[in-house]
Image (cartoon, rainbow, N blue to C red):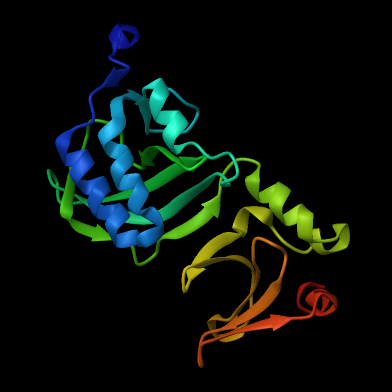
Length: 209
């Protein structure tokens, strides 16, 4: 009966900030500006969303004028594993980004039941994926209705290769995949040997249908 009095917001813990700084650093240059954003977090909300175990960041008004960019698609990073310092167990973490702003993270464990160990972070399975309606709108821009029926938009993720984002459309043999970039060029990316080969738009159907 006392759950209605549970605190719904608090300050960002120092161990959270340190761990997020480490994570953004490990994810690469494309995440460097999110480290700076952590200094502007006024407080965090707790479970104030339909996303389970979400910690969402709250910033002051002037912050958005400096960092917000509605041209950047909303995305999330899944597959992060961070050790729980208290019980030495794995915590599965998802990061969320909207309009070029880091808006929070969720975990598979109940909020308040763990503490991140910033020295034990595994990003080997990390995948950048669309969040919300972003995936649907971008993919529909470049695929025909018939081609769309052969894919699952929820399975599409983003790989950053040599500083450029490629949208992973379909898995091929031996770890290769069919992908496209932000302007609708299509590629076959091969694993061994590594190669990014641009393909003709007409041949995309041969891989999908």
